Length: 172
Image 1 (cartoon, rainbow, N blue to C red):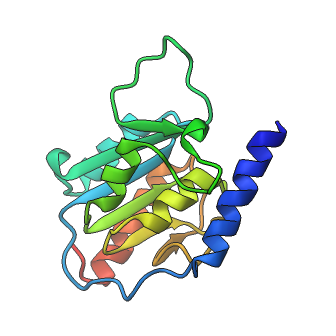
Image 2 (cartoon, rainbow, N blue to C red; image 1 turned 135 degrees about the vertical axis):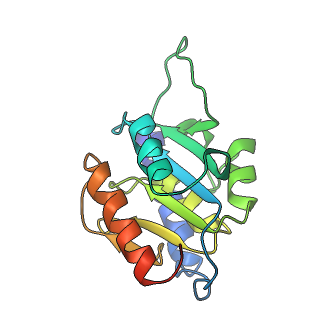
């Protein structure tokens, strides 16, 4: 318990000290590739979320998913790259190849689909080289370019609002 608290504290301090602001201005290019960072601990409807994205014109092969869960069960089968709190180091970095590969890829848009602040998720969002970052308004406002005021259970509202504003911004 104490060790988990200390890791979280260290990670949040690292974020704070690394000038947490979103890097640069979002690009003006249209959105083709999407990175989807999902907190599987509280949100289980990832299939429906993906279907909503597909219904709005994003191609399945252009979506890359990374799942986070606080704790995975030993016999749990996971079909997507994933990571957990165990991958957080004492220095506030993530020591997982899936996370590093995901963060290094230059997506046109990163959807940070989590509405509670968790250090591993925030670090992944911060380290991502995505051109346009989207998330929830309950998360630190310096991490994303665009925030939607809803909760994670309302994925249909989230996606409809997202695509409504992407059309206004001429990104799709």
